[in-house]
Length: 97
Image (spheres, rainbow, N blue to C red):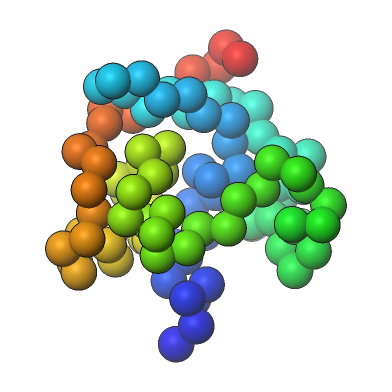
């Protein structure tokens, strides 16, 4: 299995986010390449060349990134392997940017 196969295509990584002490705020605004219907990146294979803000979710990010929601398949993988370090934050959906 490839690392990318873990992804559940929730699409939350394509949304603008803000992190505070206890909250992960996920905004309605998304990347220009986000395909709302499929909840995937429309330029997935070229995403790092076409979008400066796109970050690859690696095992290290799955273990440490506080901007990934607890429902993220990569985060769940890290938890199963006992390597997830940030505590879960309450997810807040916001229409304001």
